[in-house]
Amino acid sequence: MILQDTIVALATPSGAGAIAVIRVSGKDAIRISSSLFRSVSGKDLNTQKSHTIHLGHIVDNNKILDEVLVSIFKGTNSYTGEPTIEISCHGSSYIQQEIIQLLLRNGCRMANAGEFTLRAFVNGKLDLSQAEAVADLIASDSEASHQIAMQQMRGGFSNEIQKLRDELLNFASLIELELDFAEEDVEFADRKQFQELISRITNVLKRLIDSFAVGNVIKNGIPVAIVGEPNVGKSTLLNALLNEERAIVSDIAGTTRDTIEDEINIGGIGFRFIDTAGIRNTEDIIEGLGIQKTFEKIEQAQVVIYLVNSEKLSINTTELKEVLVEIGKIKNKYPQKPLIIVANKVDTLDKNEIETLKSKIEHVHLLSAKQNLGVIELQNKLLEFVNTGALRNNETIVTNSRHYDALLKALEEIQKVQYGIDNGISGDLMAIDIRQALYHFGEITGEITSDDLLGNIFANFCIGK
Image 1 (tube, one colour):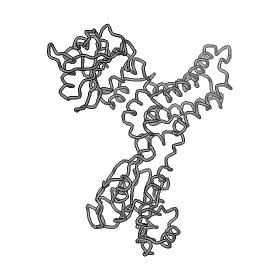
Image 2: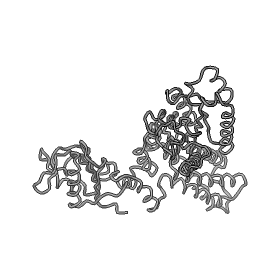
Image 3: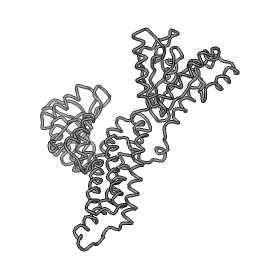
Image 4: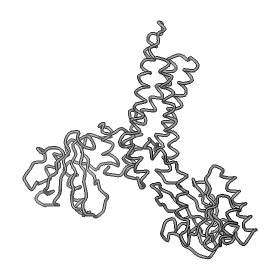
């Protein structure tokens, strides 16, 4: 990694717009930018105070490229922790590229993906978990994912880990000190306090590990498969949930030959709905492939909506029995997967028929996708499957699989330490397990890193961040 040179990149999305921001960072950022900038008041950028903005022109020899605003961040008082210039220019793609090319010709190089945030990490402005939260914040597309990313970026998660690590490190030092006085048989680490610390660390780690189940679905969205026989209104329901004509609707059975996916936000949580091909026996090869994909999507989904035609069931006892058999098959095959039975087209039934249907199918949800009746209630039902209590209480929620893996490994080592305490194992053996636990804590905050690890993390960032 080359972190000593001066880098440049477009910090706003590429393409034309009202304005664009070009970011320059590195030890020569102010010097290079100053040589290309002509202030309207004749000021020299090199002598101006940090956190000031100046109006002027970017000039290539005697050719004015654009009228711009230049923001100055001196010393370590910047996002990257090094001298930084941000040039706000007009949003023409031509102007953006001309200014960037001019900076490249005068000593800058193009920034790599995530290199500004990488420099912020290397210069101690962010720890590694906070740096990763920057990418999550940019990618957040719901209130919940935004809230989690902000909490992590402010250091909520890393502060919790750092506190545990510091306490454990203190006891590790005392235990290793005991090894130097092994012949005197002295104890510097109070075993009762040590036991309390290990118990507390175990509880915190388990809570953080358990939170990943919620954090992962909030970050990536909850996949919901809409399944059922052909022509029961699956595509109509998808359109009603999305409030747009996303899927083709037809009275012809088997219209949906492939899965159709789209995402909506319900109560700040992202849900990814998957409209699948109708499940039935068919000799049509293409439709058969679609049905095969339906079962694949049920495997991937975290919630399944099984849609039935209430109009048919109210007049056909055989049809009702067949539906109950299919529902039983799905329940038996996926016992841990939440299953919502939805009776569609209830607008065509009278009161007695509705009561009969409710008595035959346990916990059935009544709905008319065509008339948009019961859709809001179904959305609220889906929210019940997401435990947002930790989110509402602003507790730390783990969303990053790298952090989750490190927490699991740290817990494994802490449990070894607990075993050592319970069985009176010697301090030198416990010290090995403690050091391993500290190592995994350090992996999360970035106190222990490798170039490969950093490369993998920051390669997922956009250029300019």
